Length: 316
Image (cartoon, rainbow, N blue to C red; front, side):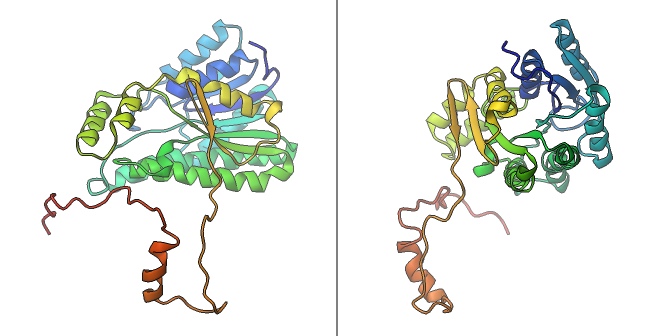
């Protein structure tokens, strides 16, 4: 490795398994001192196990790197503060934060419980806020820092994961807000949207669910094949390392994609069309919107999930 992160120290949440583990090992190999945060919960957020974090720390030390484990949950605001403070206590400073912690509880919206919603939102969105909030206090004072939030293409819309997609969409907005608030202090905040096969994304249940979606016409055969043949998490870390490095000092508030053999950037969310009343202060009538919206604002629009008349209506 080129030791692009030599002398830098930071926190990586969800670092015990999957994408977080690969990012942590790669950053340590590049010379970073890392706090390996992982309470070792199951895929659905239940239980706990210190082994994943300890195993990553042991692997880093075996390779000659420096790391400490932290088993706290990012959902707890005070615990998140101790996680961030732990980096300063152990290594003297905080240069970066990478938010990877996450859980999944797949349900269609009509089957999702309040607990399923709250648990996923708490880990992904609140957990990211908790760590970012405490990190930004330190980074603002030192006028330097790099924050990377892991998101997912689910933020653009998904099936069976409204809780997860909503959380990731919220993290995109959080990322953009932090970038604008902290940029003046030399702190950047970007989101990385990877594709990778992990225990989170490629369980037998997930595969079966994808098959059902294919058969129901909710996804194309190409989308199904891409999911089933998804590459591993080892291809994700180079983008994170780049964004944390000094070479990316001027990249801020962006959502970048990475997978095996492909990197991309998402477009900025901007208005693409507008229609105006002849009278500047005029109020649109419903009849006018019915007439003009389809042939102007929605020109070329295709409904992503049109009603299927052959399906029976649910019982009232």
